[in-house]
Length: 298
Ligand SMILES: Nc1ncnc2c1ncn2[C@@H]1O[C@H](COP(=O)(O)OP(=O)(O)OP(=O)(O)O)[C@@H](O)[C@H]1O
Image (cartoon, rainbow, N blue to C red):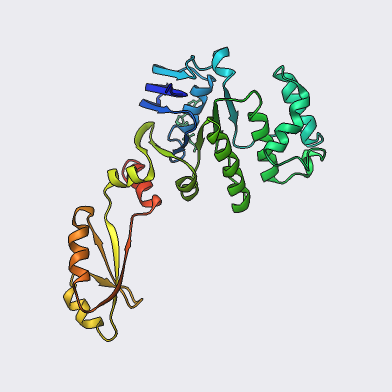
């Protein structure tokens, strides 16, 4: 299978700043990939290079088999900026008809595109009356012109309420199922955890980690938390049997445990007669993200 996007040893410097350093990755057809990183990590720089908007200093980038920014690549790539702005006096249909004619496509497709993003009923209303979630959908309808094979989305759900976010990801799921590759940046960790196939973590221009959440969890090898509930009247006896555990006032005992020791520790706890119940809490995506995206000095 040919990758939709291939980046190999990509380096980009601005005066005095190495915005990307030796970054390599690929995105396959139908994959939903999240690009995470602190402010200034290099996410927008990478997107601009993929779109062919800025040159790079070293490495190779191939978009649908072509050079970024070439006519062949531009025909296959669509972009949705974080705050897509539309003319408030135009209706959704008029705006999309306008974009279609700019792209040399049939304006009559506008209603189909708006229907695909759930805006059929609002197509004849002025965009000035749309909610932010509806305006993002207009942006997505615009991005779908010409059936792109790669969608590049810059924080597409920032400012959307939870229901609008869920609906937006459902639209992306449908596109990915049809083979469109999706590269999106986000600061919303929990939503990308649930709604993307792979996570890339950039820090100071370097790709620190990539993979599914399970891959990142394994690579980070952060300790798991174990919370143990004592059987009735056994609080003191359990605390004595587990001297490494701490009480924090919720009636349970808590401890951290290295991944490699987990099974042995659990076997020991489950063998104790003073235990009524236990919970194993894996590191959260926030913990994993902080592990890989530490800034210097943190
Ligand atoms: N045109 C430019 N000239 C000089 N430095 C730049 C330019 N564009 C970006 N940079 C620098 O490159 C680094 C990466 O910036 P970039 O905008 O790619 O980060 P980002 O991850 O998209 O951040 P954010 O989440 O804030 O959008 C930063 O240090 C930034 O200051």
